[in-house]
Image (cartoon, rainbow, N blue to C red; front, side, top):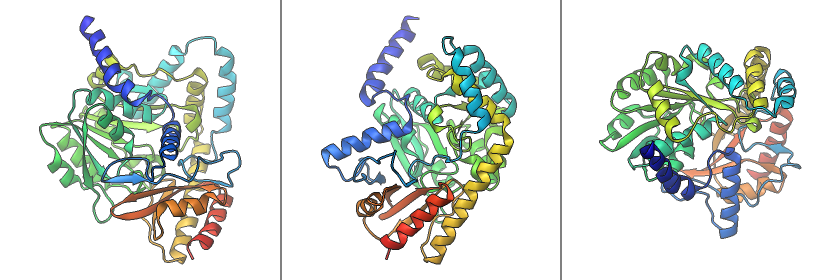
Length: 396
């Protein structure tokens, strides 16, 4: 017990105090980065040579945005069934929710074909990415991941004392699995793959991914972040979750923030080998920070297949509308398998953001591969029409 207490103490000192509390919504972390960048008049939100994000001219006025297209939210959720379940459970808010959390865990385990002890819950999947990074990299080591990649796990790994070995995507925007395997060395603690990838919205061939995971996981754990998997063309058929059921050394994370439309309710999960999740639980407990109403809403949303299908259809329709617009303007873009699209811009990212923001709209702008990019989330059709109208004025 003394050793475990010392481990927790060292972890808190080394990790949490150096990067701030991480069990918060990703948009809160982004908001803090924006505030700091605006205060210091920094052009970018990150400080690395591979991938960066332009600082917006101001924090978006969320109450008056005409097109809220920056956080890859689902504009149609949560479902009525989820909302009703949430409201009903509020009146049990005086009680802890361990029993209902256990029931949801078992429900997810059954859906994924694994045992309940192979499921770890968290307030959003980003929380689980960051907890994994804190545990795996508290004593250093490197994470092999794509260039570009979703930075949540990578940033915390670096803050905890690790390093990032970035591997550029292939020419068709898939993960370069051969190069990633070659990048593994004696100090590699984890391979992290976001599939479909963020911020590129692209997906890697499922058969190649399965072969890679089976082979590489014998050398080092492989973490597959599947936040957007339901929105891909193949849907759940593209998931690596069956490999967890086969007892491969794989972690797979999912979230209720995207297809379920519950970004503000903060709930997600990851599945993996029971001993791996127990190692993480020894230092930072899973399930903490999830409210009873969010648990009830998540369970109800899992049952509302009509809503999930409707959301997917609307988001894909918005994606088709927007990519058709880009085609009409002869603007290239990466082939999206998510609820966002990224395309190159020929003006500086900060200048582009200023012109978008002055029209009471919000998107994101990145810089990687010596190119500036706009990433736009798929909103309701009227939001997409407003944004394409704005692009007609901005990209003259």
